[in-house]
Amino acid sequence: MKTNKLFVPFLLFTIVALAGLCFYQQRIIAQQSFEIRWLMANGRH
Image (cartoon, rainbow, N blue to C red; front, side, top):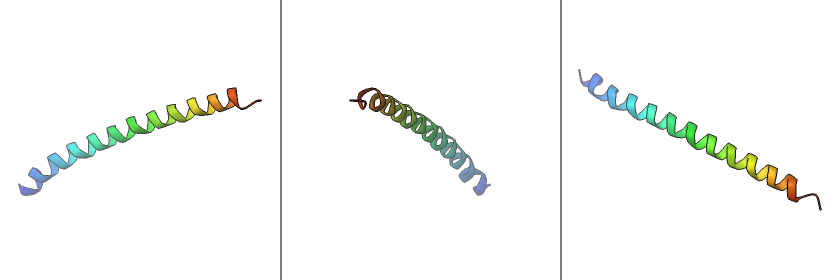
C-alpha cells in the first residue's frame, strides 16, 4: 500500500507538470511566431 500512497501524488505531479510544459511551450511558440512576423514586417528596409 506504500507504493499506492506514493504513486497517486506522483501521478498528479506528472499530469500538472505535463500540462504546465504544454502551456509554456504554446506560449513560447506564439511569442516566436509574433517575433518572426514582426521581423518580416520591419526587416525589409
